[in-house]
Length: 308
Image 1 (tube, rainbow, N blue to C red):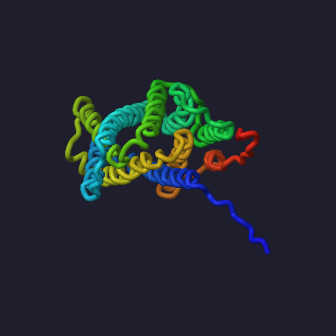
Image 2 (tube, rainbow, N blue to C red):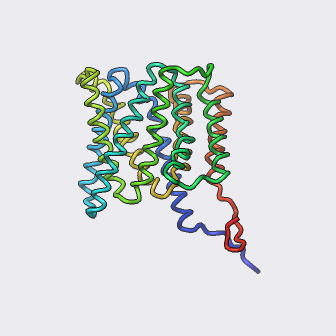
Image 3 (cartoon, rainbow, N blue to C red):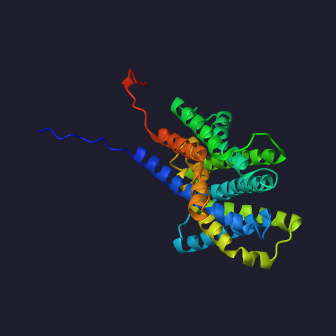
């Protein structure tokens, strides 16, 4: 009797799957962090919270690196410093614009506009001569945007000053994703991640002492949210992003990371007893479907040396 042979995944497919799973875990951590960020902002301003959060994250990753003791070549060190500074600046810009925007717009609109980075990433890729995504990916992106609209928008979509700040945040996160896609194959991902945290933290604290009045009392009251967001949301999740993007197309990466919004809604439903409407449920299903569709490989036939 002939035994049926199951198709085996090649190394590239395995690495792509691994990258997507790591990004899925990062999105889950970011989504669950929504509750911690909401509590922490009760006692600290946006720049102060982001500053202490990123400095703590950088310290945690630095301690890990001391025990790991993995050396880098001179070229890797150069790219780690350069990439860490560039990614840290984009991370600071994006997170700051988002926090400022939240003062003037609703959480729902902010979530939807921020998620537009899933469209901005491939558009930015065109300008840096990246290969255009296949038609299946564009369908996934359109489905995800429609799902995000169902999930996040509960009122009329009228643009305000806050929405412009949040849109700037979406551009910042898009640039952050593109930058990581460029540098991650050239560096020790954990080291570059550590540098970006310190850069973002220093810039945030500089703005905090210029515009806000951070206090030890505020830090002590926010210690648990700070620990969660610094160790898990920043230290673990952003480092997972850098590692995962070594094996994942930036457009697919942005699509998987958009699940953060879904997990934040589910976290509110599970932890804060918030209701999940039928419209929101449909939106969640649409985004999940978009991510799954993007992961399904297309069957290709080889004809005359050209993949069809």
